[in-house]
Length: 167
Image (cartoon, rainbow, N blue to C red):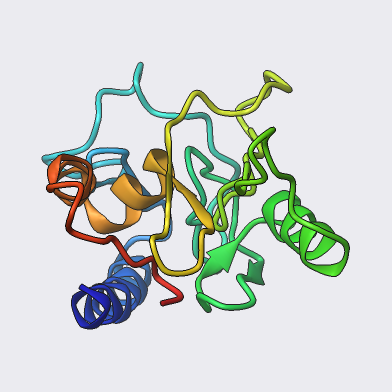
């Protein structure tokens, strides 16, 4: 799985850059597809998040975020907005939050930060890596690796370990 994930992330990054070069308004959807204004498979205008004026930077790859990805995730080398990058750096320099059992409680990609204006953490499910114990949310994994990937890893047998993007 680690090899598949490594190839998936690398392929996604290459596709992302190529698509962004063609359309600066490109925004990934939660179903793993992309939408953009004027495209035949774009989401209806009522479903599209409000976007700032087009910029030359890619969009943030965390959870439900469609802000410009002006910074880079330290380990994944993928675009993050300022809010997600700052939270990741804060957790990384101090400590990551844990639940009552001592398990990671914040996604390694989005850090559990909502950027949709509610101030509440995103409504998501987390999965812990069977190797390192770090948490990853369904919103980040499904958005960037496809909803099918999330379905596959959450329905696999308990005996089959899941290894995260780092492992």
